[in-house]
Amino acid sequence: MALCVLPPPPPSKYYTTWRKSAMTVRMMTASSGGGGGGAGGQLSSSYEEGKLERPNWSGQTPLSRLVGALISFKPIYSVLKLGARQVLISTAEKKNVPWREMTKEILESDVYEEMESIQNMSIIYPDYYLNPFHAYDEGNLSWLAAAEAEAATSSMMRRTIPDASSLEEANEIVRGNWLNAIEQHHQQYSGNLKIRDILDIGCSVGVSTRFLADKFPSAKLTGLDLSPYFLAVAKYKEKKSHQRSNSFQWIHANGECTGLDSQSFDIVSVSYVLHECPATATINLVNESFRLLRPGGTFVVTDNSPKSRKLQELSPVLFTLMKSTEPFLDEYYLLDLEKVVKDAGFVNVQIILTDPRHRTLTATVPY
Ligand SMILES: C[S@@+](CC[C@H](N)C(=O)[O-])C[C@H]1O[C@@H](n2cnc3c(N)ncnc32)[C@H](O)[C@@H]1O
Image 1: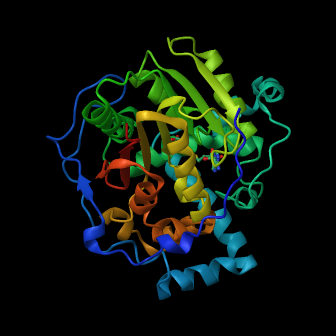
Image 2: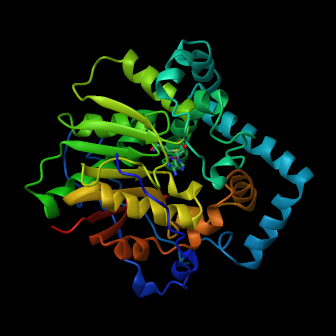
């Protein structure tokens, strides 16, 4: 395993005000999708961009500062945190995501036995990771956060496609369009490079890893995360379902500096991770992904789109609640991700709105 020393990247270099022309956001339309296995193939035609470069509740606007000041006042933060949690659970259950049942099932299972084989005792957590996240005081470092993660993901899918009649339908659009974007990009720019090894950085409890496995059934999957609790759930769930032909490994490491061998993956995926990271971590994650990919390999990021009309039009109550549980949203929305990716050395950088709220960025390591 190669060791790496993290240089302190200068994030402000990437905060330059965005010019419209600097962005290459495309919208996925009903005619632009490909087929493919796993979830996917179904595309919506109405993923609209808003009028702004980013939501005005994010970044450094007066509104954003006001919300920031509110959240930083401890008594208000505590109330918001509880409110955010209640909204999450009740909206999930209204949409038939059995949040409490799913959580109980994990907490009362044998998941704890996986911890010993997963946990890397020598890991040094980056400071940002020790912040409270998602209304959990210990952030992602707890059994409760791990037990609730899959319900939270399912709920997010239902919120993204509110008209979907089921979770499966919402996943087919959100996860399906993301998978199709990867497949199309890889076929277009890396045609001859067989997909043998896929790394899912920030795999959480393995939901994204399982979707990648179903889409690319002959690939070997590596799920990597900073939370040993999440990884224990991922491993427990994967062991319980014997239906896949792929092989899986779960690694407890920092995606900014994994220690894995250079050029050992054909696809590196980072899904719904970067909005939880400060800019410095994002820059490190992108550079590390570049190092880990083989020439011709495909990098894919999917996450909130600053251009999404839906996100720009979020109600003040909702965006205040959201910001109270996501400490790095302002940095996320300010960062010019396309520039970060190009500066890391990637080519063929494309950004597509793959659902009403999220963009998918794909890029290639040059041959
Ligand atoms: C919202 S979850 C990702 C969900 C998952 N990829 C999916 O699509 O369902 C974000 C994950 O990123 C992980 N994470 C954050 N920073 C990380 C880092 N530097 N290295 C590895 N994992 C990280 C967190 O522990 C968390 O599990």
